[in-house]
Image (cartoon, rainbow, N blue to C red; front, side, top):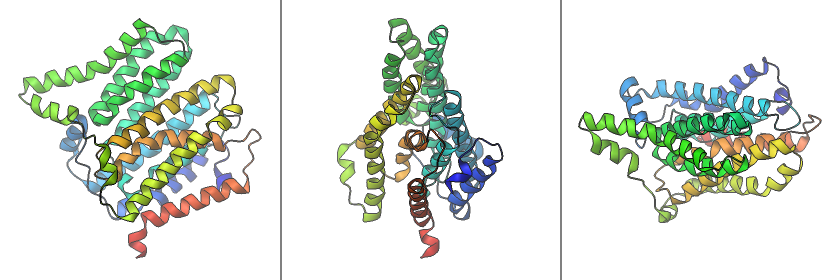
Length: 328
């Protein structure tokens, strides 16, 4: 099946849409309840559109496709990997549909879109003339992501770390980044203060639900099995990093390190979240999709049997997990 996506033809996007609908169709048949743990911007969105679960399932599917294409374009434009294909988009769609909890417009999906834009801007730090302006806009995008889901506020850390890679770690760049990051928060806080709802603003955005012991809740084996799969994927991503770096051109290595910075912080956040549901796992999907998608690329564009088998096994497990209630 991978051979269908081993090119850059526009018509291949139609196969991606079909693939997306197959993976996420269960979310249309039985729309899942909307998460209650979003930030103020997510709550405003629900207030604007209402708690229409079917509508949010549609919006989530559309946004997943948009994110997949943006992520793939980012790989194209930065010439990451030697061969152009849709593997990054494909793996993102597969991972983003791997759990039924992902089959709606969650705050983590919506927030990840702004993080993706921020990463795209971070990559512009390679251009000396754009540094200060880019730093400021990266901060704004991460600040907005934090207002959608408070757990994205900590992503300012990988943004700062990534600035080392491009020689932009100077006081003026750091100040520009932090000013951009705090501006959306200040504007929202002032707005909520004047309408007499500052307490609600504070509770929604700065009462973090962190607790290491939450990993040892009395869950069923299925939940722990899902967690184990994502832990294994993270471990594999770390394990393949040296192999991934050796087959990349110099400029691409910097971009890959940026994604690893974000992956480490995202996975570290999961260790301390008070996990009440599996939607939190979406925090790592974007970076895992990028890393494995780039790793699958071959210099000669070859699709091996091993690659096909790995994809097929993961696709089957995803479909069984998503449609298990229909098959029971």
